[in-house]
Image 1 (tube, rainbow, N blue to C red):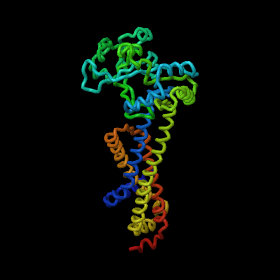
Image 2: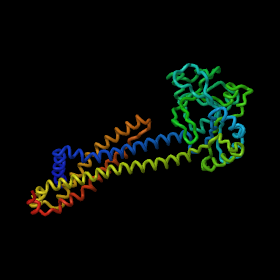
Image 3: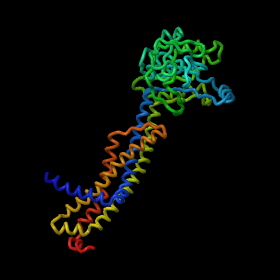
Amino acid sequence: MANLSGILPELYMGFSSLLVHKLRSLLTMLGMIFGVGAVVAMLSITAGAQKEMMSFIDQLGVNNIIIEAREAVDRNELQTVRAISPGLTFRDFRAISENVQGIEALTPRKRFKPGKVLPKTTAEVPMLIGVLPNFVDINNLKMVAGRFFTEEENLHSAAVCVLGESSKVNLLGYDDAVGKFVKVNDVWLQVIGVLASQSGADSDVEGLQSMNRNNMIIAPLNSVMRRFEDNNSYLKDEIDGVYIKVTSGTDSIETASVVRAILASTHKDAGDFTVIVPADLLEQRRQTQFIFSVVMICIAGISLLVGGIGIMNIMLATVLERTREIGIRRAIGARQGDIIRQFLTEAIMISIVGGLIGIGFGFSLSKIIASMAGWSTVVTFSSIAIAFGVSVFIGLLFGIYPAVQAAKLDPIEAIRYE
């Protein structure tokens, strides 16, 4: 209680000093406000990007390898590429399956954009993809209703499908979709399941083409090949992707190198495929985020430095203004430690108030950035605690010199000061 009673007057004096010089105090706080706001916004953007990336990588599968066929820009490019390479085919799929060690499961993929879908939707027409039943396990997909199709249904080219979350809502509304039918081009498919919401990239990522992973109609591979393609079509042997899941303990990056070597032997220099390794992609993104964080920390640090210098400057001016007061306090028994504590308290109060306003500013700034740029931001307790701790530290660090200067004043000379 004795310590508290000694601090309370100093807190009161510090707060009174802020109120007496409102404009000066506000201008002094600006550097802290912008600096702390930048720290909060930077940490929230970084945390949001990390969460979004981890969610996306988790959907792709850290132990997975994805092969994507690169689409030709026009017919001339397609003819040029086909003169060198047959494209990504079932032959490639079999070669990988038979020659690459450490594979737990893999599935080819055929996809296309339907010309029409019933029930009609005003939203974007969902993508139809054909895969093997193990697709759900390879990609760690969760079902919110019904089930995924079976090996038997794929073998018999069953007219069944599984809907993504968005395609289910767009086509069949919010009622139970299992058991209902959707018409894709001229083929009716019975809905047997609905997938849980998935994360996805808004743009191409390292060769992985952007695709709304929630706006899909997933059907058995054989069903897509036999019901949606002409028997004489030259595309029968062509696929547009392969999903590979490696066994636990297998290095997916090394396995991907073997896959690239196998494909390169038949595709030569056509450049008509891309091998994506989510584990490698995650590491690259972490490095990019680290560089971004360092840059943002430097920017925030400069602003905080300016704020700290502002606090030191205003406290030195305050010491000069209150020289006579300091002399009187020393003359009636105040120790040097009391003077230091008084001015340190005032400096820290300026930084605390500026820090609190800065936290609010940073929170608002992160929401504005999220709204304008379409980024995901997450304001965590740790980001607020770090920003507040930094503001207090800045006030303490830059308040020491003025406080010591005040304590060193000679009481007699200070009382004489006009």
